[in-house]
Every structure is written in C-alpha cells, then in structure tokens.
Image (cartoon, rainbow, N blue to C red; front, side, top):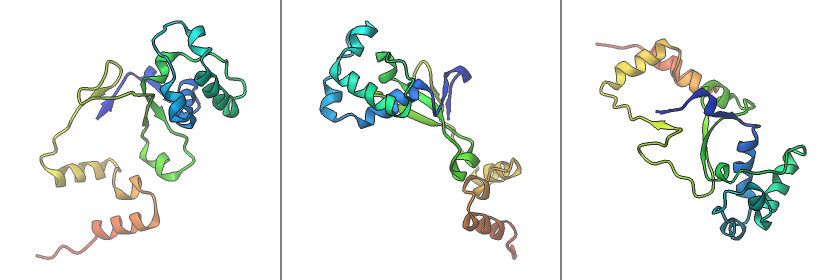
Amino acid sequence: MFSMDQTQIKYFDSDTASCIANLTRLPQKSKDNVDYSSNDVRKFNRQKAVKQLLHFIKEEKPFFEGRIDPRHLRSVICVKGKHTNNRIAFQSGAFLLFGDDATLDEGGSPEIAVQRIAVMNKRSVIKQLDQLNINESTVFPYIESSAKYIAQKFSFKGA
C-alpha cells in the first residue's frame, strides 16, 4: 500500500507531471548530459537538454513558464490519472511517475510511505471487499468481467 499526504498528489495536467512525463521523449544521450549538480534553477534551465525538454513540454502546454526545477525531474510523484478510460475511472486509483534515475525502495521515501499487508484469509478479504463493492466487475468494468462475477456469485454450491 502506498500512502502520502493529500497535498503531495498531483493531477495528470500538473506542471511537475508534465515535466517528468516528457523526460521519456528526450533521447538517452540528452538525458545523460543533464547536470543536476547545481541548485541554481536558472543555470539548470540553460542546458541544451533541458531546453529540448522545455520544447516538448510547451508542445502540450504552450503557456508553461520556462522554469524547470531540477529536483522535480529526479523525484517520484503520485499522479491522479485522467478518467478517459473506464478501467482507470472505476479503479479510483493513482499512478506513480518516476523521474530521471528516481527509485522507490521497499521502505518508501519521505514523501511516499510503503506498507506491505499480509493477507492471511484471502476468501474472507475478498468477501469483505465485495461488501464494499470492490470486486472483479467494478475494478474491471467490462461485460466479460461482470458476467464472470455474477456467474461466480450466484453459482450453485452443491454439498
């Protein structure tokens, strides 16, 4: 289970999410040439690779202010997805977006706590989740999943 302060959650159209997502459009050679050692944001933004990244960001966000914080590009953030897909909308979840060389170890980070939950009685947990309307038909909202769920729920359980 991943948890974080609500203020740490970004939306799909946030500037930070755009910066990290557009890193994938940079060629690896350009990413390798980015110097993160300076804390001077102006100096960081004058780098050729960062200017190229800025170009990609402005393609999707023309009014983006040309100032990228280098700390953002190396972070892991939680992003609420755009609900253009039924499956994403029904799962009511979020995504972790990883910046350049960003990692999240087993213990989490100062921003993102990681907890493991051991499930001892799987059938009981599945039944409790179903009572909360969390089941195969709501997590995977397709006719096949709904039909399978209904068939299992109401199947004849002989002696």
